[in-house]
Each structure stands twice: as structure tokens, then as C-alpha cells.
Image (tube, rainbow, N blue to C red; front, side):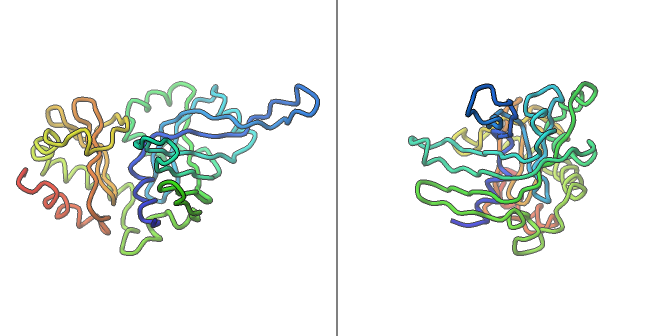
Length: 252
């Protein structure tokens, strides 16, 4: 049970259950006016490990956050026969509205959501205060939010940011997209994460490169997401090329 595995888990997910506090007013004697409210959202971890979301101003969870910015997000991988043994990360944090350029990583992973900004949608960042990391049955620990941030990890992960990621996407796409397309064709569905991701920055045929982070990269293959995880965290963006060459092996 390691913090590193929790960091990897955080970055390899982009969907979560969002818990907010709903003030219902006490409708009956003795009833609490504050009630929990849970909804489903797309989200992505930023390189400083806040969580980026986009919500509608008409949504219940948006109204709740206007009154009480405290929230929780549950990330899960329900891949066990026993649901309660599934790995999961429960994040406790505080939401704040941000300008769209500060949620660039979210918009790059979900480019269709840019159009929503012309409607009633806006971007949020959830600053992580602490998280409950459960790797399995009877294996749980609390982690401070600052310890989930890549900059708190060993090595030079502080060099990872939106700017370095955008440059990497362009460079990797230019050099490796044919090989990544062939490689993705040989990746079985059981060996990748099946989270739903839409978005692309560079495209060749049916494969698009969507995102890169220290723990892996996202491809979009015929509209279906494929997470390719690195064996070890890539400590510095300059080492991504060598890592991808090694991962591709003979596929290049």
C-alpha cells in the first residue's frame, strides 16, 4: 500500500461520483436540513493534483457548491467479484470556479465540452485536502492532499505541467502515432482501463493521442478509450520518449 499507487490511481481515472451538501430546509420535525447529494461527473487530475470539472449552473450539485464549497469525489475500479474489495480513492476537497484556460487539461481531454462553455457550463477546480485510499479489503489509509501532488513525489515531477504536456503530445504524435496505432491494435481490452474518454490533440487514422502524464498516456481508438500505463513513473518529461520506445518494443 503506497502513496505512489494512489497517485497513479488518481491520474488513470477521469470519471467520479461527486458528493455535495444539499440544504433542503427541514421539511419535517427533527429532519436535518443538510443532506448529502451524489452525482456523476467527468473529471481529470491536473498536474498540481487539483481535480478539474465542468458543471452546469442549472445542476443540483452546482447549486449545492454555491452554498457550500466542500465536496467529495469517489474514484473507483469495480473490477473485483466483491464490490467492496474494489480499489477506490475518496477525495475530500473544496471547489472553486476557474477560468477555462486554467482548466485546459480537462478541455483537452473532453474537447466536445468546449461548446458547453457557450451555454450555462463553467469550470471548477477541486483542491484536495485529504483522501482515503483503499487498495482492497482491510487495506486503507488517509493521505494528505499535498502528498498526492506529483511535486511531493521523489524525482523531478515538478517539471510536469500543462505546457510541458502540450509540447509532449505534439512531439510524441509526430514521431510515434503509426507505432502507437499498431500497438493499440494488439492491446487486449483486459489489459487496459476502459474508462470513457473523448478527445484528441493529434490524429492518425482511427487512433488519437489525448493526454500524457507521469504514469501513462491516453489514446482514443475508434472512439474508444485506451489507457497505456508506464511500468514506472516518468520522473521528467524529457524521459517520455525513451519510455515510449521501450513500451512499444518491436511495434515501432
